[in-house]
Length: 445
Image (cartoon, rainbow, N blue to C red; front, side, top):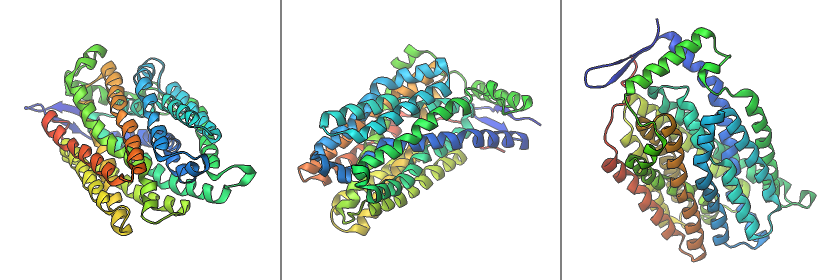
């Protein structure tokens, strides 16, 4: 028995499943997802460890909160300028070489961060970190579409993206422990040890990528010939069943729906960046000053975020619904940010609960979001469109930390939280207004 995709009257798509097909996709998941998640954990740790290093680095270097916010955010300018070219290069040279280049590059820049002494050095290296990491996230999203049909993608995206939450679970305690235990060793501050010890694994992982990843199913020698044929056939049926989608690069750039998705994702990233780079600061503001303690608190919050991302993705697949799973999750994140603005720096228990709600809601919206553009774009348009959506929307990642740093210097961090909350709440309204309901696929039999 093989899997068959069929178009029913009215355009809905059904999938007949078999034990062979389920076993095949489990095999693909176990081959690809753990390694890609490991790379994303390293990427996320090297991107956001500055939020933990900040707890002592700013005092050591006499940097203001505004300098920190600008440096944290300038990362996303590098992202903006180089993400689309990176995804186009992935289409030409393959995933493993592209992802290896990216991973080795960001690891080297992370190590160099330990030598920062001046603001301009901080800004320059953060920009270069964005340049090197550009293309990884949308590249993996595109890469996974080569291996999984539309019905299975929300769960797979959720599993992959939950690695960012896992990075928060691991990264906080690790960074806090390094700063506490190694501060002063060899004459280096704790934050310098953080950048060194968290950059080296990325360099090694980038080298391993060249030997481990497979670009496309037809090259997967770890599958039998029958398994490769079954996988390729199922993916082709999925493409045919979805019907016509935009393939051209220029047409993708001119497509209004791409820019609507940019606006939607901008709102989500605004909140995600504010929480990522100022989450540890907020925990300190409510009374927890030890870096290790801050790390463990953020670890618990991100563990909840990981659970939210996975469960929301699974439920979206089962319910065959995307728009409200994304929009309502973002709305929950906005509520958390709003409450947080009223209680910081006051009640620690309420503040931590509000911070948890903000993180869980915001992170749970992200993997489901990516199901929407993947319904409308394919081929080269997907490579460019996904990267374009991610890179332009991530300009919010530049604006949010800078805004938060400036307002914190001005003694008005609550105002920053409320502004971000309003922007994130707009996610729901934009989805309802601009994204028409669509059938992805019906639930498996």
